[in-house]
Length: 129
Image 1: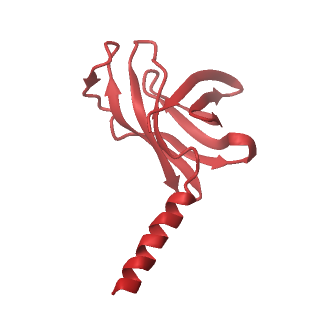
Image 2: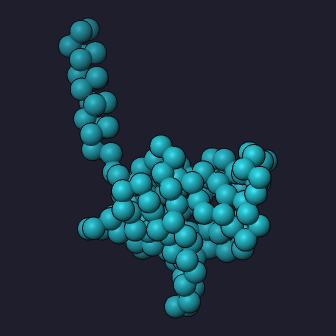
């Protein structure tokens, strides 16, 4: 029994050591209305996806939002030098989904979405944890 417990503990530690640097909770930039959110990014198959887990009003207080629980980042593939690409990003304030990319640098995640070659800067998200 002790051998099984030790093997399970080692497997958990190894999994944590292999976590991708983009995994975690990220605070979005404020939208046109001053609202922002916390997006949890984690693996989804061979890529990464992010779900809105909390929403905040312009006053910084948590608000009820129909978008909480919604996938905001979908199918981002990790490439070299902190680039995540080939996925989509949903913008709740515009109710639109864009082809997207993200660039990770430390605790900052630069987000961008494009439609028909026209790109919208999604700003820089900051790591919450």
